[in-house]
Amino acid sequence: PTENWKGGREPVPAISTIRSETETEQFLDQISLTHDESDYCWYSTSVSFQAEQVRQDDYVIFECDAADFIHVFCEQSYLGTSALPLFEDRRNNRWTKYEREPGFHQRVKSIGRLRELLANLHPGVSAPTSVSFRMHVLCVSLGMIKGDWQLGAKANMLDERKGLFPSPVPVLKFESDGKIIQELKQWQPTPKLEGEHLKLASSSSPFDTLSTLASHSEMYQTVRPESSLWPTWYYAKVPLSKALSSSENLVLDLKSMSKGYSWVNGSCCGRFWNVAGTNLPVGFLHGSPIQQTDVNQPTQRFYRIPPKALQNKSEHLEILIFDELGFSPQGISIHAIEEVQNP
Image 1 (cartoon, rainbow, N blue to C red):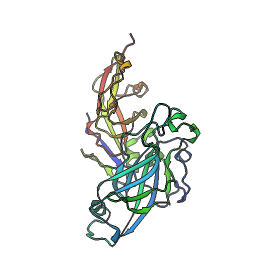
Image 2: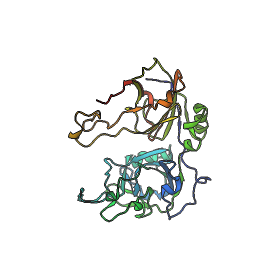
Image 3: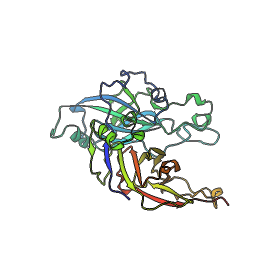
Image 4: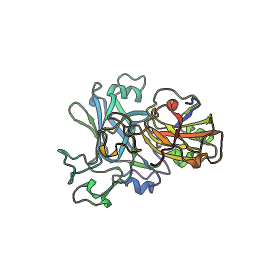
């Protein structure tokens, strides 16, 4: 384990930014914006309503169609995240028969009541006469589908889309009775993360680049043990305690993180997602090198560090983490494991 972490928040898109398209009702597909160079795309809009509409003891619901996974923020406050589990088959097919097809529908419930959101948006104001704020939706692509059947019986993979969809119109509404607070038609898309534009992962000096990123938001010289509930980049330089044998591999244990990407010495260790399994172990894998986890246990927590990351025989590992909800990296650990030999 290491406690030498530094962190910087990913800034939200400004209202006017060179990288963003003009606000439009004709949403651009995420892949056409990112050119498949990133899993991430921001969609931002303005929300405003009068005080008489406010039910401070109610929860707020954001509803939209989007692919594949979203986090919703109001100004600098976290609203909520896509509900789990996500269904791989979007429509009914010869193998899957839903009573109600999940499609691309997203229903995100606020983690707190409206009064808590207003307190964060208008600190010190007990009864605002009007409410206005910028809403930011971070859309996350989880990769392309396996085949046509996952989009429906008569679908084609060419119909696969990513990002926030224009129809049905995204809405903000109350949970208690479903009354719509506002239809959200005008959106500003901003492809990729600021940390990606700054090339944090390939930087020869990640800490200095992280400081540049944090100049747009906030820098954590000492990382807190609790989650910040905000997309956050973390960096640490960790000494290697021993030399590896030829049969050992290094792995990152990311059980303390939420979802995101990891790099070691500039080499990507892949996406991580601390999501619980929902299916029972598969029988045909019994006795194989593939280890299965029980229901409600993380589907994966160990991530192999690529051998090329260790080729320079460095005595240190430079670890870069992007966590979509800013979970604390203080629980990350590094382990040496014996390579599984084929029988």
